Amino acid sequence: MKPCLSAFLLLFLLLLHQSHFAKAGIGSSLASLFKSLNKEKVINWVNGKKPPKPEWDKEYLKYLKPDPTLPNLPLNKERKGFAPLKQYLSNFGYLPSSDSFNNTVDQQTLSAIKTFQESFNLPVTSDIDNDTLKLISLPRCAVPDMDFNYSFTQNVSWPKAGHRWFRKTNLTYGFLPESDVQPSFTKVFRNAFTRWANATGFLNLTETTYDDADIKVGFYNFSDVLIGDLFGFSFITENPPSNVKTAEINLNGNMYWALPSEKGDLSAEDGVLDLESAAMHQIGHLLGFDHSFMNDSVMYPYILPSQERKVELSNSDKNNIKKQYANVDSDDSGCLGVPSITTLLSLGFAYILLMY
Image (tube, rainbow, N blue to C red; front, side, top):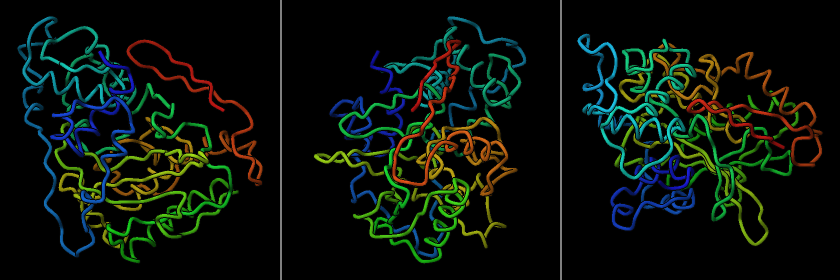
């Protein structure tokens, strides 16, 4: 078994350069993902045409549909489709990583299913039911839900909950030139950044060039998707020799990103997603927020059919902002002043992370 970090990276490494890593061996650090995001993979997504919906292999889902003749998943028995389900749970932090998931029904996976169901307030069956299948078939953020590793590996890390990677209050953002982002879309991001800046009460975010930006935004071709409809993810880079940190937001250029004026056309099932909702979510990660299991939160990882546009901060989002930024001065002092504690439940164990 590889280090725990690789569990969360496997999906993304396979997303962007599956064939390359199949030959070279899948990397075990987020740095591999960062290096794979070369500009050859960028697509010109703002072309006035709806691209074909990316299809990930949902074939295994049909084998997991509840069988009335099998009220419980039989332990230590083979069940077709169980290996990709294990991979899915591993990608988002519910199972440890493995190079060789199989179709055997085991207690560890049943416990992971239970944790997943409890986390998302689904009926807890420790079994695959229709509610669980419906949720995992929806588009979601590629950032894991729990059991994070925040360390910088080859200068790249996930955003750390409750922590400011930036040492100033005036932040800039810029768009990858190859993404050819039009003014109507930059306006959407500007509105999203403004929402978060107003909520924190001390940040100021302005647009600049991509190379000079603190937060770099790009649209990429998430090709060779292994498991899951993924709309985007974000991460932090540390730039030697100064170790100045910058951030990246990567969105799936194969999706059709709708403007606020096109909200009547939104359809998660057809790959038509609300751009501002995705921007709000990824900016939230970069400002120190993990996924929320409250479905009214902008940090909820899935795009629900009943909430395809979600740009207003919920009461829980606002409370989290107050908690995390209550002791941050409006100067450029950097980190949060008071440590906070987050409890992550995974596979029956509690992980306590002290975050500064």
